[in-house]
Image (cartoon, rainbow, N blue to C red; front, side):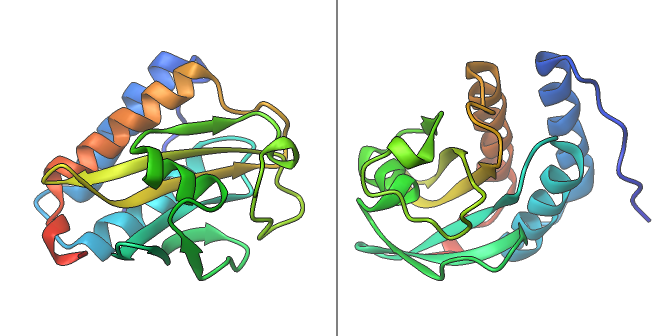
Length: 166
């Protein structure tokens, strides 16, 4: 049984505790769908002010496909280079958007979303997916959040058999 912990509101402590919780939750499990599903649920139940938390997986050079998530039903396919998720893949870098309505080409899966953070997931130097976080609050994601969620993705990259995602 896993009880969702109460995590600190201090950003650095929050992200350190979130990583520790994810490591404990994953244990020795290597399956990507299981680990991504549990990561999405953990983020959803611990990070405040989210209306979507999940993953898109790269299924071809040109496209991301919806993976495990928590929140409202979402767009199923996103072209690389399109929207915040596709832009993160094309840039091979995290993208933090304070106001998604000001982001050129934003894909509005949920009209309530106001800000977004997308972090690439890599395997063997190639982007194989992204962590996508949406919030109904403008400028919800800080630089500390970006650094913290990038570190969380590193845990997933190191402890998950991502070669089976491709």
